[in-house]
Structures are given as C-alpha cells and as structure tokens.
Image 1 (cartoon, rainbow, N blue to C red):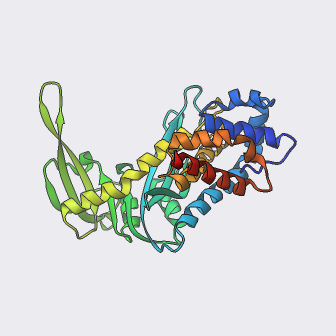
Image 2 (image 1 turned 135 degrees about the vertical axis):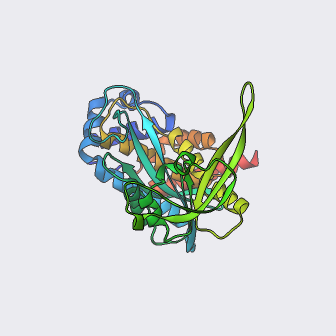
Image 3 (image 1 turned 90 degrees about the vertical axis):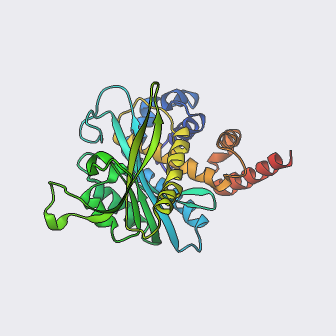
Length: 328
C-alpha cells in the first residue's frame, strides 16, 4: 500500500497503517516498530506526494470496480476540515489562523455504498470554483445525472460552472434574504461580478421549527436548483444525494491517526491513507460494521505486508472471516 523507498520502508509502513487501524498517534506507534518518529516524518516529507498519488489511485480503482458497467451517477461534493492545536502554519492552511486544512471530495452512492471518486486538498489561494472544477474533471468518465453541493460552495463562479449539469446547491439564507416559504426565480446580485455575469436560478426556501428553552421559532433554509420537479421532490433529492457524504467523512476520520507534525504533505498522506482504508471498508459494508472491519484488519495485521500476495491474502481472509461471523 505504501511504496516508500529505503532501508526502513517496512517499519515506516507498519507505523502509519497501524496508527490508522488503532486510531492512535503516529509517534506512539513508531516506537512499537523500533523506528524514530523523525525517521517516519523524513520518509513522508521526502516521498509523501508520490505515495499519496498512488494511494489515491488505489482508492479510485476500488470505486471504479464497484461501479463497473455504470454510466450515470449522482455526484455529491463537499469538504471536511481537520484542525490541529499548536503552532499555526502559514501559506498552506485553508483557515485564516492556519490551524486547519480542508480536504474536498466527490462521492456517489451505489447499492448502499458511498464511493470516493475524486479528492483534492484545499490550500490558500484556491477558489471554490477551482475546487469544484478539479473534482468534476476527475470523474468525467461518467455522465453526471445530478450534482449536489453544500452552502460553502455557493458563489457566482460555482453556479456558472455547475449550470451545465442538473444541480441542487444549498444557499445561505442571509445571502438571498428571503425569510418565508418561497419557490420562484432568483438572480444573484454579487458586487464582485458584472450584471451579465450574474446567475438566474430557481430558489426554494423552506422552514423548520426550532424549539428553544422559552419559545419556538422558525429557521429558514434555501436551495438553488435548475430541476423541474416539485419543491418537496427537490428537497428530498438533495438530502438523499448529499446526506451520505457526511457519513463517509465520519468513517474516514475513524481511521485517521494523530500526529504532531504540521507538514502539509504528512497530514495529507495520513488523510488519504485513512481514505483508502475507508474505501476497503465500503467493499464489506453491509456484511460487517466499521469497528468489526477495523478489528478484522488488526487481527490480520501481520499478513498485510506480504508484497507478493497482499490483495489476495487480505480479501480472501476477510471473506472467510466474514463468513464465520455470519454463521454464528
């Protein structure tokens, strides 16, 4: 899984993967394999980008294998933020304080499995439409039937780009300033764009009752779309397509180890490694739960480093073990 080059590759690989499986710190696990935390960091910082690309390719292959024969997909795009506590990092962090990075993904749901199709880390200076374009470009082998996005992507440039697809995007109510049930045409009024650059779309606004300590109040939510469906159908479709991506982030973070390193390449690699383990988990979702899957891999840990038959041994043993679980 980890194609590092050097004398300590086995120890480094075992450190990183075991930290993922145990949801432990990389520094703590390195001691179990008689390698210093600094050695692990050196390997990742020097070779991490190439290894990360190969890991991403492995994750995509898992999804593409499951989607074999599928031509059209519903695509959900969102990002998740990973924050650390300590000295801020300048230049690469996506937050103003430099204590976090955003990782954006594009996923689709197929037969109950949330599959990763595209990934990109967000760095300072990267616009939201650049993120969306980069993710969509990675899935152009499929016809996009519908694309859904969170309110964080609501910009004129993003709207202009996704208008070529059927789309539903969440809209900050404060931006449109419509605080009532609404279903009608709306045109953006961004001060950063000329009048001919504004985007017209169908705006849906709906309310939910919020129960406070002393009284009840209505909270309003908005969606932008170009779909010609009833208001209820559009809202239900958005939740159906976009909802699973939140679950996928929770599952990815369950495999994400801790580290004291604030290096961009290091934190990106461990996030992608957690993403690959999540992708492996999706193969068996429905047969075993996430924690059962994690425990199975921990029990099989010694077999994970046979380079000649890694995939065969893991898959065959997992299927056999799952069969035993189902027979109980």
